[in-house]
Image 1 (spheres, one colour):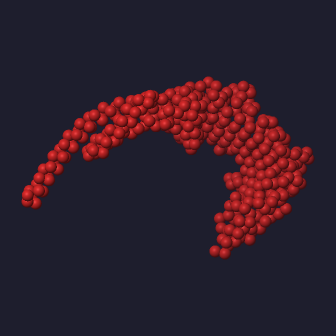
Image 2 (cartoon, helix red, strand yellow):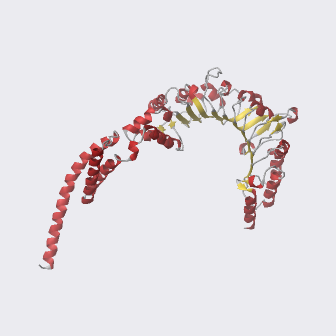
Image 3 (cartoon, helix red, strand yellow):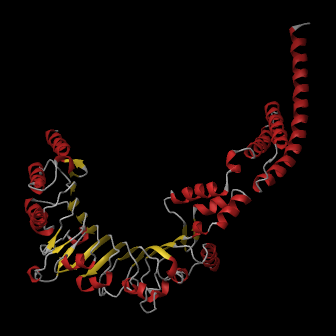
Amino acid sequence: MSMANFRRQSQLYSKHLDSANSQMCSSLEATYQALYTEFLAKSRHNDIPNSTADRVRLRALIDQTRSDLETCSESATRVQISKVLELQESLLAPIRTLPSDILTEIFQLVIETSSNPGITWKPTKISGRIFLLTWICFSWRDEALSYSAFWSTIAVVHDVPPGVPPSPTEMTALLNECIMRSGVSVPMRIRIFSYSSTDESLPAVIPMLVAQAHRWRQAALSFRYLHQIKSLFPFKPSSSHFPLLEDLSFQFRDYAHVDPGQNPILECHPPLQKLGLSLLLESYADVISSRSLKVLKLDRYRGVSLARLLRMCPRLESLTLRSFESTGNPKASKTIYRSSLLTLDIGGDYDNDNKVEYGAWNSVMLPKLIKLEVTLPDLIDHQDWEMAFEARTSLSKLREVIKQSKCALQHVNLIMYVADYKKWPQLTLGTANKFFEDLPVKAEGSFVENKLLAEWKEDLESTIRL
Protein backbone atom coordinates (compact mmCIF):
# COMPACT_ATOMS: atom_id res chain seq x y z
CA MET A 1 0.00 0.00 0.00
CA SER A 2 1.31 3.40 -0.99
CA MET A 3 1.85 6.13 1.65
CA ALA A 4 -0.93 8.25 0.07
CA ASN A 5 -3.45 5.38 0.29
CA PHE A 6 -2.41 4.75 3.92
CA ARG A 7 -3.03 8.37 4.85
CA ARG A 8 -6.42 8.34 3.08
CA GLN A 9 -7.49 5.15 4.91
CA SER A 10 -6.31 6.56 8.23
CA GLN A 11 -8.33 9.71 7.69
CA LEU A 12 -11.47 7.66 6.82
CA TYR A 13 -10.99 5.54 9.97
CA SER A 14 -10.50 8.66 12.10
CA LYS A 15 -13.69 10.17 10.72
CA HIS A 16 -15.52 6.93 11.47
CA LEU A 17 -14.29 7.00 15.09
CA ASP A 18 -15.21 10.67 15.45
CA SER A 19 -18.68 9.97 14.08
CA ALA A 20 -19.15 7.02 16.43
CA ASN A 21 -17.88 9.03 19.41
CA SER A 22 -20.19 11.90 18.50
CA GLN A 23 -23.19 9.59 18.35
CA MET A 24 -22.21 8.03 21.67
CA CYS A 25 -21.78 11.47 23.34
CA SER A 26 -25.14 12.59 21.96
CA SER A 27 -26.78 9.56 23.54
CA LEU A 28 -24.91 10.13 26.81
CA GLU A 29 -26.00 13.77 26.96
CA ALA A 30 -29.69 12.83 26.96
CA THR A 31 -29.08 10.12 29.55
CA TYR A 32 -27.14 12.37 31.89
CA GLN A 33 -29.61 15.23 31.61
CA ALA A 34 -32.21 12.89 33.11
CA LEU A 35 -29.71 11.63 35.70
CA TYR A 36 -28.83 15.21 36.70
CA THR A 37 -32.50 15.98 37.45
CA GLU A 38 -32.79 12.76 39.47
CA PHE A 39 -29.66 13.22 41.56
CA LEU A 40 -30.20 16.95 42.07
CA ALA A 41 -33.51 16.12 43.75
CA LYS A 42 -31.79 13.44 45.87
CA SER A 43 -29.11 15.93 46.92
CA ARG A 44 -31.60 18.63 47.87
CA HIS A 45 -33.68 16.24 49.95
CA ASN A 46 -30.58 14.52 51.42
CA ASP A 47 -31.86 11.22 50.03
CA ILE A 48 -28.73 9.29 50.94
CA PRO A 49 -28.37 5.47 50.57
CA ASN A 50 -29.12 3.98 53.98
CA SER A 51 -28.43 0.27 53.38
CA THR A 52 -25.20 -1.45 52.37
CA ALA A 53 -26.77 -2.67 49.13
CA ASP A 54 -27.86 0.87 48.20
CA ARG A 55 -24.36 2.20 48.83
CA VAL A 56 -22.82 -0.56 46.68
CA ARG A 57 -25.20 0.26 43.80
CA LEU A 58 -24.39 3.98 44.10
CA ARG A 59 -20.64 3.29 44.01
CA ALA A 60 -21.15 1.19 40.87
CA LEU A 61 -23.03 4.09 39.27
CA ILE A 62 -20.18 6.43 40.21
CA ASP A 63 -17.66 4.08 38.53
CA GLN A 64 -19.78 4.00 35.36
CA THR A 65 -20.10 7.79 35.38
CA ARG A 66 -16.33 8.18 35.67
CA SER A 67 -15.83 5.75 32.78
CA ASP A 68 -18.28 7.67 30.57
CA LEU A 69 -16.51 10.90 31.46
CA GLU A 70 -13.18 9.45 30.32
CA THR A 71 -14.50 8.14 26.98
CA CYS A 72 -16.62 11.15 26.01
CA SER A 73 -14.89 13.91 24.04
CA GLU A 74 -17.74 16.42 23.62
CA SER A 75 -17.08 19.32 26.02
CA ALA A 76 -20.76 20.14 26.65
CA THR A 77 -21.56 16.50 27.45
CA ARG A 78 -18.50 16.21 29.69
CA VAL A 79 -19.72 19.19 31.71
CA GLN A 80 -23.11 17.48 32.19
CA ILE A 81 -21.48 14.20 33.22
CA SER A 82 -19.18 16.04 35.67
CA LYS A 83 -22.17 17.66 37.38
CA VAL A 84 -23.87 14.28 37.81
CA LEU A 85 -20.64 12.77 39.16
CA GLU A 86 -20.34 15.55 41.73
CA LEU A 87 -23.93 15.02 42.90
CA GLN A 88 -23.48 11.24 43.11
CA GLU A 89 -20.27 11.51 45.14
CA SER A 90 -21.81 14.10 47.46
CA LEU A 91 -24.49 11.57 48.51
CA LEU A 92 -21.69 9.50 50.09
CA ALA A 93 -20.06 12.48 51.84
CA PRO A 94 -19.68 11.94 55.62
CA ILE A 95 -21.17 15.36 56.42
CA ARG A 96 -24.58 14.11 55.19
CA THR A 97 -24.68 11.55 58.00
CA LEU A 98 -23.73 13.89 60.85
CA PRO A 99 -26.06 13.93 63.85
CA SER A 100 -28.23 17.02 64.19
CA ASP A 101 -26.43 18.36 67.28
CA ILE A 102 -23.00 18.20 65.57
CA LEU A 103 -24.35 19.83 62.41
CA THR A 104 -25.80 22.60 64.58
CA GLU A 105 -22.39 23.21 66.17
CA ILE A 106 -20.81 23.49 62.72
CA PHE A 107 -23.48 25.96 61.61
CA GLN A 108 -22.84 27.99 64.74
CA LEU A 109 -19.11 28.19 63.98
CA VAL A 110 -19.78 29.22 60.37
CA ILE A 111 -22.06 32.03 61.52
CA GLU A 112 -19.97 33.27 64.43
CA THR A 113 -16.69 33.40 62.49
CA SER A 114 -18.21 35.77 59.95
CA SER A 115 -17.06 39.40 60.01
CA ASN A 116 -20.72 40.30 60.63
CA PRO A 117 -22.24 37.44 62.64
CA GLY A 118 -25.96 36.96 62.35
CA ILE A 119 -28.28 38.96 60.11
CA THR A 120 -27.54 42.43 58.75
CA TRP A 121 -30.44 44.57 57.55
CA LYS A 122 -29.92 47.55 55.26
CA PRO A 123 -32.57 49.61 53.46
CA THR A 124 -31.86 47.82 50.17
CA LYS A 125 -30.84 44.31 51.26
CA ILE A 126 -30.64 41.80 54.06
CA SER A 127 -27.68 39.46 54.37
CA GLY A 128 -26.05 36.85 56.59
CA ARG A 129 -24.34 33.47 56.39
CA ILE A 130 -27.43 31.80 57.79
CA PHE A 131 -29.18 32.42 54.46
CA LEU A 132 -26.37 30.65 52.58
CA LEU A 133 -26.81 27.58 54.80
CA THR A 134 -30.52 27.42 53.98
CA TRP A 135 -29.78 27.23 50.25
CA ILE A 136 -27.63 24.06 50.31
CA CYS A 137 -30.34 21.40 50.68
CA PHE A 138 -33.73 20.89 52.29
CA SER A 139 -32.32 19.09 55.34
CA TRP A 140 -29.86 21.93 56.04
CA ARG A 141 -32.65 24.42 55.54
CA ASP A 142 -34.84 22.60 58.06
CA GLU A 143 -31.94 22.46 60.52
CA ALA A 144 -31.22 26.18 60.14
CA LEU A 145 -34.87 27.19 60.46
CA SER A 146 -35.50 25.01 63.48
CA TYR A 147 -32.67 26.48 65.61
CA SER A 148 -33.89 29.84 66.92
CA ALA A 149 -30.48 31.03 68.11
CA PHE A 150 -29.27 31.30 64.49
CA TRP A 151 -31.78 34.13 63.96
CA SER A 152 -31.30 35.97 67.25
CA THR A 153 -28.31 38.15 66.24
CA ILE A 154 -29.57 41.11 64.20
CA ALA A 155 -27.90 44.30 62.99
CA VAL A 156 -29.69 47.30 61.48
CA VAL A 157 -27.44 49.63 59.50
CA HIS A 158 -29.20 52.77 58.30
CA ASP A 159 -26.93 55.17 56.46
CA VAL A 160 -29.43 56.66 54.01
CA PRO A 161 -29.46 60.50 53.96
CA PRO A 162 -32.68 62.44 54.67
CA GLY A 163 -35.10 62.76 51.77
CA VAL A 164 -34.43 59.29 50.38
CA PRO A 165 -37.60 57.13 50.09
CA PRO A 166 -38.05 54.55 52.86
CA SER A 167 -36.95 50.96 52.36
CA PRO A 168 -39.24 48.64 50.40
CA THR A 169 -42.06 46.98 52.33
CA GLU A 170 -40.74 43.51 51.52
CA MET A 171 -37.44 44.34 53.28
CA THR A 172 -39.30 45.20 56.48
CA ALA A 173 -41.42 42.07 56.18
CA LEU A 174 -38.33 39.90 55.71
CA LEU A 175 -36.70 41.20 58.88
CA ASN A 176 -39.95 40.64 60.77
CA GLU A 177 -39.92 37.03 59.57
CA CYS A 178 -36.34 36.62 60.84
CA ILE A 179 -37.40 37.98 64.25
CA MET A 180 -40.25 35.47 64.34
CA ARG A 181 -37.82 32.66 63.53
CA SER A 182 -35.76 33.66 66.59
CA GLY A 183 -38.60 32.49 68.82
CA VAL A 184 -40.09 34.18 71.86
CA SER A 185 -37.59 33.44 74.65
CA VAL A 186 -34.14 33.10 73.04
CA PRO A 187 -31.80 35.96 74.16
CA MET A 188 -30.93 38.39 71.37
CA ARG A 189 -27.84 40.31 70.32
CA ILE A 190 -28.80 43.63 68.74
CA ARG A 191 -26.76 46.22 66.81
CA ILE A 192 -28.33 49.44 65.54
CA PHE A 193 -26.28 51.99 63.60
CA SER A 194 -28.20 55.01 62.35
CA TYR A 195 -26.74 58.15 60.80
CA SER A 196 -30.09 59.87 60.35
CA SER A 197 -30.37 63.47 61.50
CA THR A 198 -34.10 63.34 62.28
CA ASP A 199 -36.43 60.93 64.06
CA GLU A 200 -38.69 60.81 61.01
CA SER A 201 -35.94 59.27 58.87
CA LEU A 202 -35.24 56.39 61.27
CA PRO A 203 -36.20 53.07 59.67
CA ALA A 204 -39.46 51.42 60.66
CA VAL A 205 -37.66 48.20 61.56
CA ILE A 206 -36.06 49.69 64.70
CA PRO A 207 -39.33 49.66 66.72
CA MET A 208 -39.63 45.98 65.79
CA LEU A 209 -36.36 45.31 67.63
CA VAL A 210 -37.31 47.61 70.50
CA ALA A 211 -40.43 45.49 71.00
CA GLN A 212 -38.06 42.59 71.79
CA ALA A 213 -36.16 44.57 74.48
CA HIS A 214 -37.08 41.99 77.12
CA ARG A 215 -34.92 39.50 75.19
CA TRP A 216 -31.85 41.70 74.64
CA ARG A 217 -28.68 40.23 76.14
CA GLN A 218 -26.16 42.28 74.16
CA ALA A 219 -26.79 45.61 72.44
CA ALA A 220 -24.59 48.05 70.51
CA LEU A 221 -26.45 51.25 69.62
CA SER A 222 -25.11 54.21 67.68
CA PHE A 223 -27.12 57.32 66.84
CA ARG A 224 -26.32 60.81 65.72
CA TYR A 225 -28.22 62.49 68.55
CA LEU A 226 -29.03 61.27 72.03
CA HIS A 227 -32.68 62.30 71.85
CA GLN A 228 -33.24 59.83 69.00
CA ILE A 229 -32.85 56.86 71.29
CA LYS A 230 -35.16 58.45 73.84
CA SER A 231 -37.89 58.69 71.21
CA LEU A 232 -37.59 54.95 70.58
CA PHE A 233 -38.07 54.01 74.23
CA PRO A 234 -41.18 55.93 75.32
CA PHE A 235 -41.92 53.66 78.29
CA LYS A 236 -41.31 54.54 81.93
CA PRO A 237 -38.17 53.09 83.57
CA SER A 238 -38.67 49.54 84.84
CA SER A 239 -36.39 46.60 85.43
CA SER A 240 -38.82 44.44 83.44
CA HIS A 241 -37.85 46.11 80.15
CA PHE A 242 -34.26 44.81 79.97
CA PRO A 243 -34.10 41.86 82.39
CA LEU A 244 -31.39 40.02 80.41
CA LEU A 245 -29.19 42.89 79.18
CA GLU A 246 -25.58 42.22 80.24
CA ASP A 247 -23.54 44.03 77.58
CA LEU A 248 -24.44 47.52 76.34
CA SER A 249 -22.54 49.93 74.11
CA PHE A 250 -24.24 53.25 73.42
CA GLN A 251 -22.69 55.94 71.25
CA PHE A 252 -23.88 59.26 69.87
CA ARG A 253 -21.78 61.54 67.70
CA ASP A 254 -23.14 65.07 68.09
CA TYR A 255 -22.58 66.65 71.50
CA ALA A 256 -23.99 70.07 70.63
CA HIS A 257 -27.01 71.17 72.64
CA VAL A 258 -27.63 67.80 74.25
CA ASP A 259 -28.00 66.66 77.81
CA PRO A 260 -25.87 63.52 78.09
CA GLY A 261 -28.06 62.38 80.98
CA GLN A 262 -31.45 60.72 80.73
CA ASN A 263 -30.57 57.49 79.02
CA PRO A 264 -33.80 55.43 78.94
CA ILE A 265 -31.97 52.10 78.89
CA LEU A 266 -29.70 52.85 81.86
CA GLU A 267 -32.60 54.23 83.86
CA CYS A 268 -34.20 50.79 83.65
CA HIS A 269 -31.19 49.47 85.63
CA PRO A 270 -30.44 46.37 83.53
CA PRO A 271 -28.08 43.77 85.08
CA LEU A 272 -25.09 45.04 83.09
CA GLN A 273 -21.66 43.44 83.28
CA LYS A 274 -20.16 45.46 80.41
CA LEU A 275 -20.96 49.07 79.50
CA GLY A 276 -19.58 51.48 76.90
CA LEU A 277 -20.68 55.15 76.66
CA SER A 278 -19.75 58.18 74.60
CA LEU A 279 -20.19 60.55 77.53
CA LEU A 280 -20.98 60.24 81.22
CA LEU A 281 -21.46 63.05 83.73
CA GLU A 282 -20.45 62.57 87.34
CA SER A 283 -23.87 63.89 88.34
CA TYR A 284 -25.41 61.03 86.37
CA ALA A 285 -23.06 58.32 87.66
CA ASP A 286 -25.69 57.03 90.10
CA VAL A 287 -27.69 55.62 87.19
CA ILE A 288 -24.99 53.06 86.41
CA SER A 289 -24.57 52.11 90.06
CA SER A 290 -24.28 48.35 90.01
CA ARG A 291 -22.55 45.55 91.87
CA SER A 292 -22.57 43.45 88.71
CA LEU A 293 -20.72 45.90 86.40
CA LYS A 294 -17.20 44.60 85.67
CA VAL A 295 -16.12 46.39 82.47
CA LEU A 296 -16.65 50.10 81.74
CA LYS A 297 -15.49 51.97 78.62
CA LEU A 298 -15.92 55.74 78.45
CA ASP A 299 -14.98 58.12 75.67
CA ARG A 300 -15.54 61.10 77.98
CA TYR A 301 -16.17 61.55 81.69
CA ARG A 302 -16.97 64.94 83.17
CA GLY A 303 -16.61 65.39 86.89
CA VAL A 304 -14.40 66.28 89.84
CA SER A 305 -12.58 62.93 90.02
CA LEU A 306 -13.09 59.26 89.33
CA ALA A 307 -13.66 58.47 93.00
CA ARG A 308 -17.45 58.69 92.88
CA LEU A 309 -17.67 56.65 89.68
CA LEU A 310 -15.58 53.85 91.16
CA ARG A 311 -17.61 53.95 94.36
CA MET A 312 -20.81 53.45 92.35
CA CYS A 313 -19.34 50.28 90.79
CA PRO A 314 -17.54 48.47 93.60
CA ARG A 315 -16.83 45.32 91.53
CA LEU A 316 -15.47 47.10 88.48
CA GLU A 317 -12.44 45.21 87.15
CA SER A 318 -11.61 47.05 83.90
CA LEU A 319 -11.86 50.77 83.08
CA THR A 320 -11.12 52.38 79.70
CA LEU A 321 -11.07 56.18 79.79
CA ARG A 322 -10.29 58.21 76.69
CA SER A 323 -10.95 61.66 78.15
CA PHE A 324 -11.54 63.15 81.61
CA GLU A 325 -12.83 66.71 81.79
CA SER A 326 -12.61 68.38 85.18
CA THR A 327 -15.73 70.25 86.28
CA GLY A 328 -14.63 71.45 89.70
CA ASN A 329 -11.98 71.65 92.39
CA PRO A 330 -10.31 68.23 92.68
CA LYS A 331 -9.54 68.97 96.34
CA ALA A 332 -13.24 69.14 97.17
CA SER A 333 -13.42 65.39 97.74
CA LYS A 334 -11.25 64.04 100.54
CA THR A 335 -12.67 60.53 100.82
CA ILE A 336 -10.18 57.94 99.69
CA TYR A 337 -11.82 55.14 97.74
CA ARG A 338 -9.97 51.86 97.34
CA SER A 339 -10.96 50.39 94.02
CA SER A 340 -10.97 46.71 93.02
CA LEU A 341 -9.83 47.77 89.56
CA LEU A 342 -7.48 45.31 87.84
CA THR A 343 -7.05 46.87 84.38
CA LEU A 344 -6.79 50.55 83.43
CA ASP A 345 -6.54 51.93 79.88
CA ILE A 346 -6.37 55.74 79.54
CA GLY A 347 -5.79 58.32 76.80
CA GLY A 348 -6.15 58.14 73.05
CA ASP A 349 -8.97 60.63 72.43
CA TYR A 350 -7.51 62.81 69.69
CA ASP A 351 -10.76 64.66 69.03
CA ASN A 352 -10.60 66.05 72.54
CA ASP A 353 -6.87 66.84 72.70
CA ASN A 354 -6.30 63.65 74.70
CA LYS A 355 -7.38 65.42 77.86
CA VAL A 356 -7.23 63.35 81.01
CA GLU A 357 -6.84 66.41 83.19
CA TYR A 358 -5.28 66.77 86.58
CA GLY A 359 -7.65 65.71 89.32
CA ALA A 360 -8.90 62.54 87.69
CA TRP A 361 -7.14 60.40 90.28
CA ASN A 362 -7.85 62.56 93.32
CA SER A 363 -9.14 60.54 96.28
CA VAL A 364 -8.54 57.25 94.45
CA MET A 365 -6.41 54.27 95.47
CA LEU A 366 -5.75 51.31 93.16
CA PRO A 367 -4.29 48.55 95.37
CA LYS A 368 -5.32 45.68 93.05
CA LEU A 369 -4.23 47.19 89.73
CA ILE A 370 -2.12 44.74 87.70
CA LYS A 371 -2.42 46.01 84.10
CA LEU A 372 -1.97 49.57 82.84
CA GLU A 373 -1.98 51.04 79.33
CA VAL A 374 -1.45 54.73 78.60
CA THR A 375 -1.76 56.32 75.16
CA LEU A 376 -0.05 59.62 74.34
CA PRO A 377 -0.99 61.66 71.26
CA ASP A 378 1.25 62.41 68.30
CA LEU A 379 2.90 65.62 69.52
CA ILE A 380 4.74 68.36 67.69
CA ASP A 381 7.38 69.88 69.89
CA HIS A 382 9.12 69.72 73.24
CA GLN A 383 6.56 71.88 74.98
CA ASP A 384 3.69 69.63 73.90
CA TRP A 385 5.48 66.58 75.20
CA GLU A 386 5.83 68.16 78.60
CA MET A 387 2.19 69.26 78.62
CA ALA A 388 1.05 65.76 77.73
CA PHE A 389 3.19 64.14 80.39
CA GLU A 390 2.44 66.55 83.19
CA ALA A 391 -1.07 67.86 82.57
CA ARG A 392 -3.12 66.43 79.73
CA THR A 393 -2.78 62.83 80.76
CA SER A 394 -2.03 63.59 84.40
CA LEU A 395 0.64 60.90 84.37
CA SER A 396 2.56 62.32 87.30
CA LYS A 397 -0.53 62.13 89.50
CA LEU A 398 -1.37 58.65 88.25
CA ARG A 399 2.15 57.40 88.94
CA GLU A 400 1.91 58.89 92.41
CA VAL A 401 -1.40 57.10 93.07
CA ILE A 402 0.03 53.79 91.84
CA LYS A 403 3.03 54.03 94.16
CA GLN A 404 0.89 55.05 97.12
CA SER A 405 -1.50 52.19 96.42
CA LYS A 406 1.41 49.75 96.73
CA CYS A 407 0.05 47.64 93.89
CA ALA A 408 2.18 45.11 92.00
CA LEU A 409 1.81 45.80 88.28
CA GLN A 410 2.30 42.82 85.99
CA HIS A 411 1.92 44.53 82.59
CA VAL A 412 2.43 48.18 81.63
CA ASN A 413 2.22 49.40 78.05
CA LEU A 414 2.99 52.96 76.90
CA ILE A 415 1.68 53.91 73.45
CA MET A 416 3.41 56.89 71.80
CA TYR A 417 2.46 57.82 68.25
CA VAL A 418 5.47 59.68 66.90
CA ALA A 419 5.59 60.68 63.23
CA ASP A 420 9.41 60.96 63.09
CA TYR A 421 11.60 59.30 65.72
CA LYS A 422 14.73 60.76 64.13
CA LYS A 423 13.52 64.29 64.85
CA TRP A 424 12.96 63.76 68.59
CA PRO A 425 14.98 60.66 69.58
CA GLN A 426 16.22 61.84 72.95
CA LEU A 427 12.87 63.36 73.86
CA THR A 428 11.02 60.16 72.97
CA LEU A 429 13.45 58.05 74.95
CA GLY A 430 13.36 60.49 77.86
CA THR A 431 9.55 60.36 78.01
CA ALA A 432 9.58 56.57 78.17
CA ASN A 433 12.24 56.54 80.88
CA LYS A 434 10.38 59.14 82.91
CA PHE A 435 7.13 57.20 82.61
CA PHE A 436 8.61 53.91 83.85
CA GLU A 437 10.77 55.51 86.56
CA ASP A 438 9.95 53.95 89.95
CA LEU A 439 6.83 52.20 88.63
CA PRO A 440 6.24 48.91 90.51
CA VAL A 441 6.64 46.71 87.43
CA LYS A 442 9.38 44.29 86.42
CA ALA A 443 11.37 44.55 83.19
CA GLU A 444 9.54 41.59 81.65
CA GLY A 445 6.25 43.42 82.17
CA SER A 446 7.33 46.82 80.75
CA PHE A 447 6.26 47.55 77.16
CA VAL A 448 6.30 50.48 74.74
CA GLU A 449 3.99 50.17 71.76
CA ASN A 450 3.48 46.49 72.62
CA LYS A 451 7.23 45.78 72.53
CA LEU A 452 9.36 44.98 75.53
CA LEU A 453 10.92 48.21 76.77
CA ALA A 454 14.48 46.91 76.20
CA GLU A 455 13.67 45.79 72.63
CA TRP A 456 11.92 49.09 71.91
CA LYS A 457 15.00 51.02 73.00
CA GLU A 458 17.20 48.90 70.73
CA ASP A 459 14.87 49.50 67.77
CA LEU A 460 14.84 53.23 68.51
CA GLU A 461 18.63 53.39 68.60
CA SER A 462 18.82 51.47 65.32
CA THR A 463 16.38 53.93 63.73
CA ILE A 464 18.45 56.86 64.92
CA ARG A 465 21.64 55.39 63.44
CA LEU A 466 20.10 54.86 60.00
